[in-house]
Image 1 (cartoon, rainbow, N blue to C red):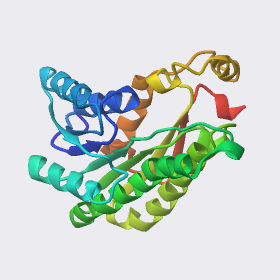
Image 2: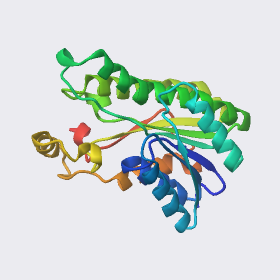
Image 3: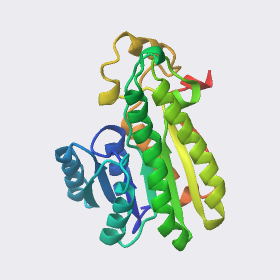
Length: 247
């Protein structure tokens, strides 16, 4: 088990990609804090699944876009598991609209969760990681942050900003044996992508592999980046998109 005796935080882990990441890290031996905002029932179900498989997990309710929640989340992980080695910033939301019709509220809400949340959690997590001179931070961005996507100016801007945060932080903390990397999923089978309508067909046509990805395929890459075996990967963005952005 590559993550035996390590403690991990996964935000937005009650369903979809976050759930798959929490399960994958636990399968590698990590003790996982399953963060959620609204769906406590789903988060508890994730924790139960991990425990039934012989792993260790605890739920933690809190909106990471709100001030003070990140610090409480890190303190909770340290209290329950005695440290913090891995952070996965996965929580995110989209409020799609053409820019001309986008409200300030829709812009700000996506920025608060998708960019400000990871900033706050990275800042809080770095304190114990710097003391321990070890850490793995993985940020879940999106291909929208790499190539843009009509109707998603707020989401694409936040996810692009997350890549800038990843590259900069990777340079700031590398000397302390802390790596910071990102993944950029493409079309993945989740609740968020289930109702795309005709846009889904257009996205599928742009994928050389000809199919959407699964949350587990994203989770397997994240688990590797969180492991000691990824010790020489730093400041990188790995597109998990079936080749969509390579063509």
